[in-house]
Length: 141
Picture (cartoon, rainbow, N blue to C red):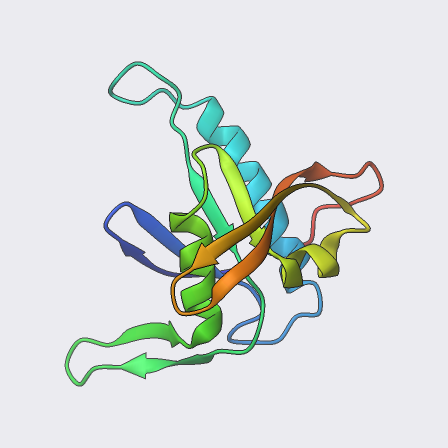
């Protein structure tokens, strides 16, 4: 897993970069599930558990270092934009994923169909909520 950056109160993480890993989607799913569980145990300033919104998409992207005096490793492309939309259009305490992620992980994880949502720049997209691991799923190292 590679922490890319924080943007306001958002945290961007990517799997499978800068080196490919065949189980990048599983590793991201496990991270997201663990983050949601830890957030439930974390009390915020309002004395209530912290609630996260998580969005996941998988696909090609461009990664590189930008800057001349202060360097920044960043990601670009449709995959990044769609993942961001999954987060922003999701619900607190939930992990919203695209159909690409659902199809890749459905044998080892539990999902709840959210249905079609309108995604800026993409139109109507089928989405799912990742709700847990099936018993045989293991944590991706």
